[in-house]
Length: 171
Image 1 (cartoon, helix red, strand yellow):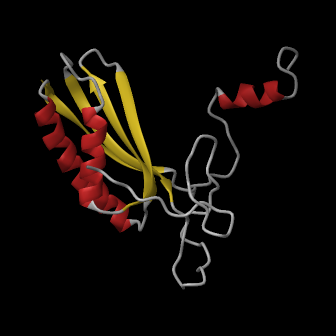
Image 2: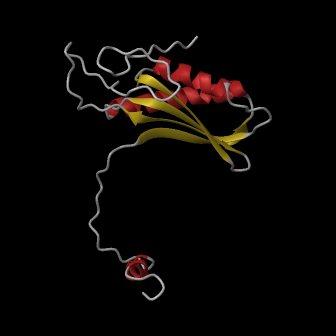
């Protein structure tokens, strides 16, 4: 208590596994992901893409099961020496189809230097979930695009002061 003050008592009990705070098991989901560790390191980018497509299918099933749609896709690469890198891509619309997951995955992998890398684990995840409790617009459709464009973003106004939807062109 002398060294840490009042919080010292808390630390004393926590390091001994004593915590009487109520467990709060229900939290807001921040991300959903799947990953696999391979018996043999992957060295070919095409093999990595094949495995990522398998993971993308599992991820989409998980997202659909929980009725979640996000706007950010993240890929995780763990190498033979256990170093990890992640690469992400955010878009302005929901990632809600296998074709979109596959296209975004391909874009990320193409921009990632995997030359002479031995990949032990691959992961794929979606985050930045759309709100599902947004009230309907005048047209009766729900919209989650109510952000104003940030500095350096080029977006047309839709008359409400908010940025309108942005079209994603993959190829």
